Image (cartoon, rainbow over all chains, first blue to last red; front, side, top):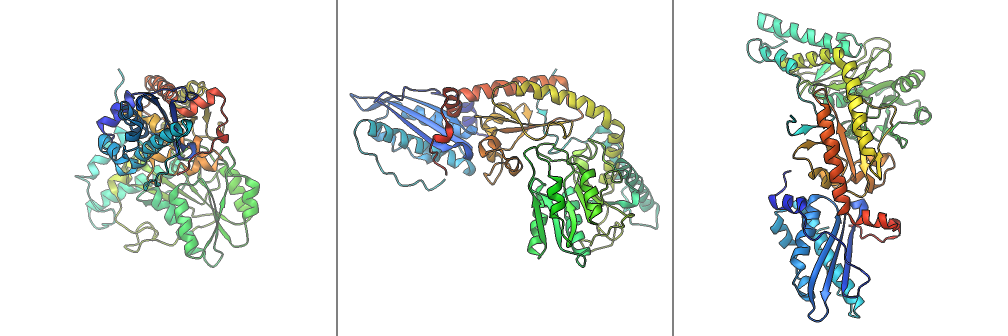
Length: 139
Length: 405
């Protein structure tokens, strides 16, 4: 199975690899996946408290190239979005962006889940109720 | 000058040796006859070539040429051996003993036997990939007709104690079948010294062509018979019908002859290169060798690089280097390698494994380049891995509630 150019590109030069200070109240952290399943994604957002806009996003991912590329794309899209808009990112948009084959759709689902988990972590830290999301269909 | 891509997946398949191809070519064109055509020179030439190849194959495994049954490959030979013995010896019993790291061609054939009403014991290997001989002996019952244990494993290269296994089998009057696909041509295999009654092999793992293999079936002490699995012209002493693949068989024979001549030198050279590769890669923190270090093939190394995922790792260099991984992502099933799991490796380590399979045309330059590329990619991906970060921070990963999906 050959990888799409875009997956290769993000894998070779991933954007936003790193760690934000999770002790800060304006940082939300989402850790999804499991080592036994072969992918773990940690996605973090740093929110401008005055505007509610995500001013920075970082990730670290253990997984295949498609999982790394999905996290790279997701973090790039998050920057500049409001927290409310962030959770509107749909995994299928990532699939389209990276031309992921069906067997790799779960990588995009993982990225969507990581975004939601990071947003919820941010909300809980700031006294807001957790948002209940429907379970993703593809797992 | 290095030429890319570098091939280090010789347990999957090997290139044809040019000397093999050269031997085959006349049998596609001028000498195209059917080896079963007994009444004209075209048939005679083909038959003579097949007979010669049969001798070459037999010689490599210390057999008599009459004991070699040509097949389409090892999968067919595995099927013929197991199903053929099961049917032929039905009056004696219906129990087969095998182990849980066999190739799917053996495991799935055994599952088929179970559906037919047979009984199969799957011995668990120890964490070094070898079976426990006491467990083997304890598993034998009055109804046991066959012990099917691979000579060497395809993923980790572990070599089973065939002599000891067959000694136990002999003691209890049970036949021994060995899938020796990975071993023949790489290490000395001798059906008499090893006490093997049936043995499967294939040409394409030993620098021969794809689509041809053989089943060795013992003719003396004891005389073994298998029930044919295909009906037809009664070729190969009635055990395997179908017009013989003459060019393939000629290539197979030549490949065996070359292996017999060059095996010792190849093994010595390749184990040296393999050890160089392995030593360098195992110097990296949290990298582990899978399988037994002593009892194994000279050209294979299977290593887990903890906290990086195998497919992601391969992607770092697979434009230039071909290896394989036990990672789930490389299989259709999304399950990591059952062989590595059978060694007691956690799924996380199984996902993190790479198999390096060296071969006759592997050079030291290629190994040096591979060491550099793999090391760099592992380091790069670990910098990107949340698990590596947790490990470095001393976080107990078992204390985390992972979201399994």
